[in-house]
Image (cartoon, rainbow, N blue to C red; front, side, top):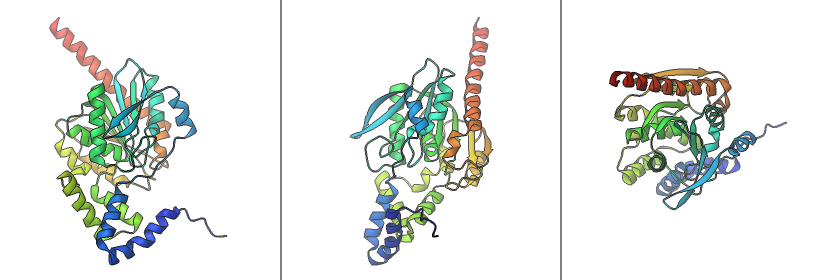
Length: 300
C-alpha cells in the first residue's frame, strides 16, 4: 500500500512549476516567488484554544485597512503579550494565557495580518512590527513578551525600535535570515533567481538589507539588555536548535531551556514550558517589587 503524500496538492504544483519557470521566465518566477514568500497559509484554533478563548474579550484593531483580531484576558496585573509566528495564530498562546491569567496577569495576543481570523492575504516582518507598535501605543509597554518562531524576530525587532518590555521569552526562533530564505527555497524548489528577487524586493520596498532582519543582527541594535529565556525543542523539524543556541550566546542576559520530543509548534502546549515561562515572568515581577521596596526605604 502506497503511503499518502503529505505535501499539499497546491505546493506539489508549485514545486513542479517553479524550476521550469525560472528558466523560461526569470522575471515572472521572481515575482511569483516574492508573492509566495509574503503569503502565509491559514491555521485554525484547536478545541482547547476555543475553550480558552471563551475567557477572553475579542476586539478589532484596524491596520492599513485590514481588520485584526485582538485577544485580551483582562486582569489588574502587569501586561504580557504573546506573538505568534509565520502561519500561526494568536490563540496558540492559549496555554500561556490560561496559566498567566490565573496569576493575575493582563494577557494580550493577536492575529497578525493574513493570519488566523484577521483579514489580509500577505504580510511581512516590517508590517508585523508596525502592528506591535500600534498595540503598544494603545496599551503601553509590557512586563513580558513571549515570541514564538517568527514572532520572536518581531519581538526583538520591535524592541530595537522602542518597544518596552522587562522580560522576553523566545521559543523556536529562526534566528538566521539566510536559513529562512534557504528553507523557503527548498519548500518551493526555487533557485538563485528567486533568491535574488527576494533580496532585491526587500531592499527596494523597505530601504533595508534583508539581513538586518536577522535576529542575530537585531540583537546588536537593542538599546538595553533585558533578561531573556530562550526555549527550543530537540525534535524541532522546522527550525534547527543550533539557531537558538547561537541566539542565546549573543544575548547579554539570557538562559536556555531545551525540551525533548515536542517539535516546533506543540512545544507551546508543553506543561513544563508553560511552567518555566510563568516562573521566569514572575521572577521579574518579584525583582521589580523588591527594588521598589528598597527605593522606598532609601527615601523614608
